[in-house]
Amino acid sequence: MEKSQFKAFVVTEKENNFIGEITQRNLSDLPNGELLIKVHYSSLNYKDALSVSGNRGVTKNYPHTPGIDAVGVIVESEDSTFSINEEVIVTSYDLGMNTDGGFGEYIRVPSAWVVKLPKGLSMKEAMIYGTAGLTAGISILRLTQLIKPNDGDIVVTGATGGVGSLSIAILNKLGYFVTAVTGKESEKEKLIELGAKNVISRSEFENTDKRPLLKPLYIGAIDTVGGTILENIIKTTIPGGVVTCCGNVASPKLDLTVFPFILRGVTLIGIDSQNYPMSSREIVWEKLAGPWKSEVLLNSYEEITFDKINEKVELMLKGKLKGRTIIRCS
Image (cartoon, rainbow, N blue to C red; front, side, top):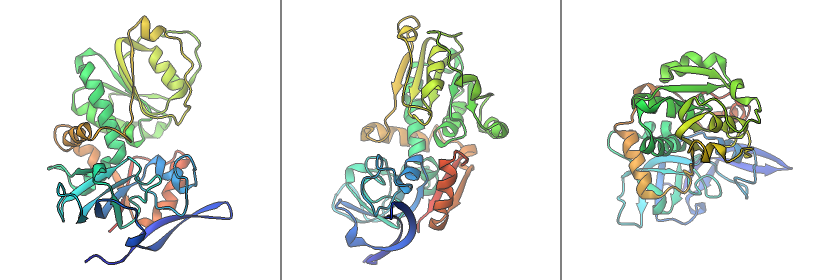
């Protein structure tokens, strides 16, 4: 029998301010779902930072427990596909957005959201990956289906962030020559350690250039920021190249002509990890646990507890948080 109360990091709206505090919650307050999971680890993502800060585009109603990632052990199951004490991963869907998320000791979710923890991956490693790892994995899966290591160089933007750093480490392991784009000059050595063969400043891609095409440089790209940087990457993609797009922190807008697509045959692939099909999601997790697993990457993280979440959220919103941050929940 599980205890009826548990500890969680809960965000409450107070006089138009959003306050995140550690509090006691009741299991009976959790939403409906076939699986009750005792959470061992969660991780900090940009959507979590937005939820903590009261962004209504992410979370509509407060009080709320954020955390779009969780890994733990099943303690109650109404689905015969899953067993008590089975280790499982839950990422994306509505977890941590409008459904109570991983910043608590327990979650209750639909079984359709749940992936069994693959062999070869610990619970801690699963959260070092988290949604960022899943997003990077989907991007790499799509990229590697169309281009091979000998085809040319790959450029990765937002290189010091979760998706960027994970992408660099995995692509390097698969034999691709990776150029990292970052605004953090001090992180050059770290990016090289992860596997980047070349590191260039974000400012090289930030200048607006109205020409419809630029000098072709890269056969592929994983872009995490959008805006002008994505525009210029598309314009510098080699004929037949592939660009994946999964973020809009710079801007959601693109000012482009169709010329990169009809004169160079560039392919632009949008990446949606939130509602990615379960069958494909399981394939990506198996690869992250097996052939794509990077020991360099999995040794690069910071582990915190609930009491440090506010501090890390503030750093993330200022663009000053480096690498992956995981949260020990129990």
